[in-house]
Length: 282
Image (cartoon, rainbow, N blue to C red; front, top):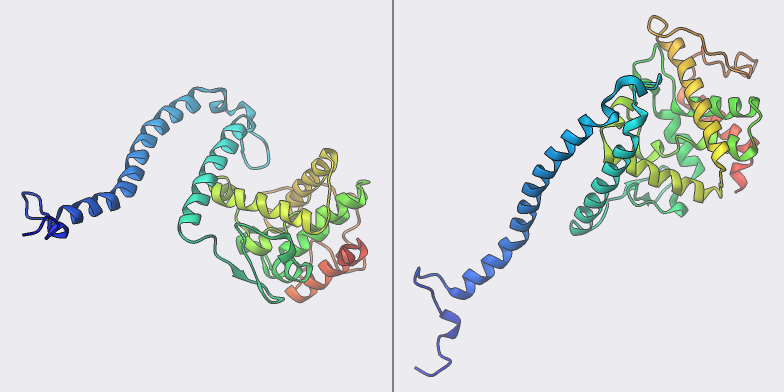
């Protein structure tokens, strides 16, 4: 036998090809490394859980009235969302990238990695007018589009700037590409909340919106106020109507929070409000 004869057939004492054994070991290195990392993470999570429970965030004194979210745990939640989001991006990259969804106007958008150029006002109006608030549990169909119009008009009634009124109309635009998720559930889904933030940023870029902190706070406050009023309308046995809105939503434009409105009418109301705010020319 020559010196190089049978080199490719070298075997260890088990009879398995050494080259084949090396190849299989290389294939197992990646998954095993991930498994080891998860094992280490479980230990770290146990320590983190204990630390969070012992922190001030465990106190119920900081609970907000809009659903029981403890303001003290927000920083921890934000860090958690960041870490999980990074892992999700890595997994998506390994899997060939984030997937796309279809748009009503044609073409696609990648909700988890959105391009502002793919965001379209007509798509937003169409989708939000077909999405029901309160996971469809209201006394009648009530769309996200109508909610957004009410928020925008209430922002105006409270003296909000044009930018704030525009954001009032667009503040839920991310749901046109992610759908709506109830707040108690959303708080447990770091992947969703991170995607929502990315889409909100893309929407602001698409419509050239630059908000001050005060404008963003006003829209958040109005969103909460309108939401509470809506709850009192749709669930009167559980919520009182203590919230008083500053604009006349009982006007002759049939936009009342108390009346039923189908998806087509809601879409038209949304687009009309967008036109009045100049969003269709941005």
